[in-house]
Image (cartoon, rainbow, N blue to C red; front, side, top):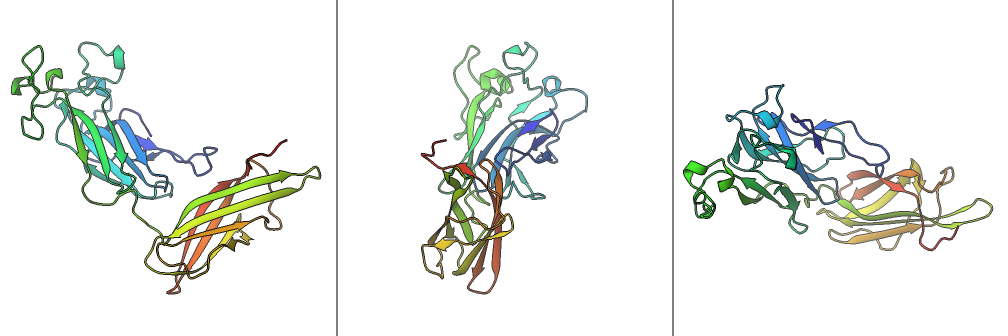
Length: 301
């Protein structure tokens, strides 16, 4: 995630960081400016992102010099397939106005005319059980409600309506998602839980002893009658430790110690693995992931 004091972008890698996608913009109207991004992911391709946003943007001044008319909000965006080209982002406003005016991004280098009321208390996390997101953020606005009481302390008597938009009213708020899609939401009938591709032995004659391990769960509501796999387009002959059909909620494990004829093995190389599950109703579902060929534990060179 990164921004240019105007828009917020992300790039993703499906090759373990060796290559990256082009920048993809996340924010959209009314957030013409997006700064201070934070993100949360659970490892299945879904991503939650939050940022401070305002509809103000003049194309000249950075947020450090925005006018007092610039109203800032917390924005939340989600993509359940963030590593899929062309996938879409939702965007919602997750707060009321939290600040007016300029926002200094220079830390301790901010001048007395540049505002740091929003501090660095900002972030998002997704529950590993429900997938619902919680956002922690700062506001310098006077609210004075039971859920958001005004601070009664401070050198100027605490936060009052007259002190709204000043450091006297800076406080921490929490917003928690109570509905909508979540990062734990199942999008497939078969979810890969574990995948390992390892070199188990290095021979003097240049031979290889590969070990491929795949584990997945039927996360749908229909039985899976069979699962096939390819690696770099070549058939991967997997020995499954369970019998089919695989009922909803059941987990399947497969291994093989043989690489397809024609597959060139090299430690550190990345291989495309395609899994195809055939369902009891005759439909199929295909998923593609990447596996890096690594050295197995205990190998001496």
